[in-house]
Length: 350
Ligand SMILES: *Cc1c(COP(=O)(O)O)cnc(C)c1O
Image (cartoon, rainbow, N blue to C red; front, side, top):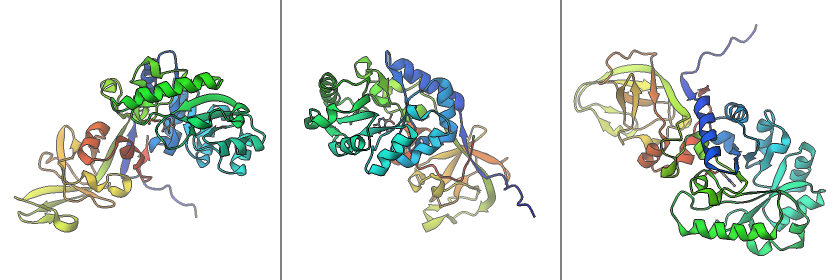
């Protein structure tokens, strides 16, 4: 007996390829003389490498950034190995051997990583300098080490800590990065992430590395109006019920109906990324222009919405949740990055 096709999923991540491509083109133009690459780590910020990479490749991306070695395979299915950089760099000889065998570039972040890479035979790599985020990267004091002089550096990079703010740290990091560019002789230089691109031409160098704003995130006001939303959530209404005045809804009975009301149960919960932080704050689904506010707590697989404004909705109908990252971040206290990367695996996508 053959297994039947699985039924259509009752929750959907609507992804807009045109907006994704347009966002990249905008960031590429804003990068001035620099070319824009694409950070596609964490499964393209939760939207899916399988969706994002082919679209971005057609748009013109030739530089891809993942964090983990485990993320290489999925990206490699769509682009040449030589276009992929692995930000975490080699922690073991096995990592270095893998990079050499496949032809992807490790980002060297420390003298230890430089030694691992050179001991494995070396070759083209990138070098991350820490200019002030104090996270991952070669300390400025190690730049003059003889091991670094032996590296064959394609992209010399650094990462901004506060590009989404008007912080004096931005200029400090820019100044430190410039000083390193004089001491190391890379093929290309790269400093700006999405927010860094909006800081202006000084921050562009040869290559920018946007992630968040490709996928619709707006970390700075300069990007408002030009960066569009890529993802929207949709869910089926799997039950409709009539609630009497005084009844409560959901776990811990946090919502009490003031009057009789009609509510719908949507097939989307915190396991899918609609975290409980969205509950009790007036956030609403939408149906043909009507607002359907979330009532009570978000459950793991479900959320209850008020259907007062949409009396025509029937069981089996679909409702939309506009995934506005900037407003959603404000409302929930989650970062725009978290709102994207938290999206779960049960959606149909496309
Ligand atoms: C994630 C990441 C980026 C992309 O940053 P966004 O803020 O998402 O644009 C760029 N560079 C490095 C080193 C990163 O880790």
